Length: 147
Length: 362
Image (tube, rainbow over all chains, first blue to last red):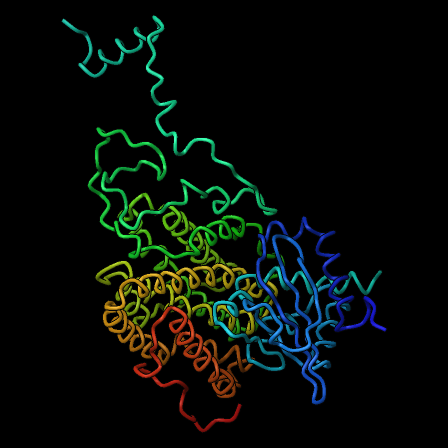
């Protein structure tokens, strides 16, 4: 059964959302965030999808999707294998933040091992527009792991 | 004989009248349509998009003919003099549906190069790496403020009824000032300094500044130029040797993406109303594409990035190969943004969609 330590799960992202809410003071100077991110796990036999909707300085909703067609139209996706996701999260947990080679931008820029995509370039651009906030959101993994 | 000018004497008379209790108070009921505005604050605070409702949200297709600085939605007395300064009076010439929202986003996402960059984490780098970082910063210091100069060149010509656009462009000017400042700081802060300017850059910068009208300048700068630079910022974060450059590029990336978002939505707004202008937009993009391609082959532009991508001058060839995909990414994103704006350019783009095989392995 999934819990806040299981990635990927609604519970894990819910726990990150709680950290974001507790740490609102860290997010406010970065500015409000208004976008929908779909985290996609790419495995040969499995394509797990979790949609995280950001609004203002927090998370509006987290939900598992059966297919990408269920996602809000204005989304972007970040896709990687479970191994890559785990490596990024473990690195964040180890250092409290990612080292230079495990930031979201570092991992996605060459389109491997992670790729950012979506149906509309302007919504993909939201990943760049809110990048610092999204990074801080994932950095919450360190706090989730320590609790 | 009066002691003061006629204007001053009139003012003193007026004050005397008021002192005797003779007030006008006509201004209190001057704008009944605009009175009683109901505003609901969003969770983020009070945004410009929260207040521009009802009477105040009516943006005229043709900006005010009085040509004054009177704010949109107020009562404008007949005798208000026009300033004869504004010639961008058509909404379609400047408007973007997201201008107000982007302004709100920009004002809360301001940062500064004095305290928001972890300068204490600068560390001594090998000479070839420091020189490459400094050259990259020299180039960015050179190009960044065109995106300040260009809006500044048009800002005071935009009708005041389109204040959302004016406000957004003002944030862009500040963003670009910060970019110029932060890249110059990085070049000078770690024992290095500025290196070589780029004649190739100047060609593109000149085309932006001398464009015939605001929309063509915007298409060239906001979508083409800033779109390409956005990818370079992402690359800068990717190649950054320390937390300092990482932070700089991440913060700049966010700013640049806002500018691109305005450019795309503005072009979309214009083309929906004036499809006949497609031709001139294509023409200026032809110019931009040629300029950026000649820039790509300038040593001071491409070599420092290749050194950083390879991890040192001894691996510059490997770095070059590793960078080949960036160009492809830039062109793909550029064409996708134009498509959203309503401009199909895939069939007439004047540069290759990807760099031909250079015969080097990544």
